[in-house]
Length: 135
Image (cartoon, rainbow, N blue to C red; front, side, top):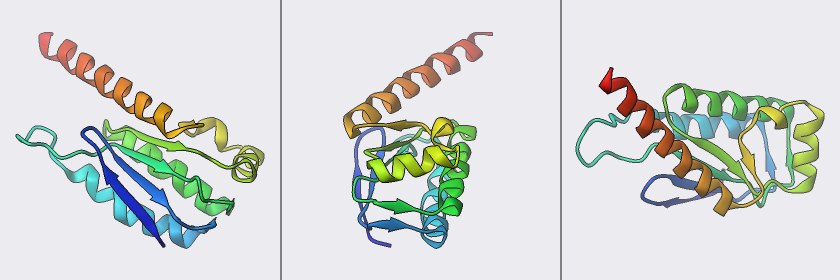
């Protein structure tokens, strides 16, 4: 699978450079991204574990791959990390809607909106951490 990684202060943008996304590729992506969740956020100089998955070049996805993306996204949220999908093309968006997974994905039309969501979720987590430490 071809992809490009761009690391920002609060997140990594992973851009998939393929026209189609299969279950095998989704498994490969999962193997690539799950290690980010093992990062200890309490360590000084913490590494970034939030992900923005840009699928702007994707024209098709199979159902198993879509389910694997939903599961991967859920794992990130369970570990207090963001996972936002952006720039879905119309055929992919329509397919995800037809298999009833689009509504449970955290997806945005643009990468800029995905950045905003990650940053808002980071602030929300910081506020929640602050509240729990005051109790």
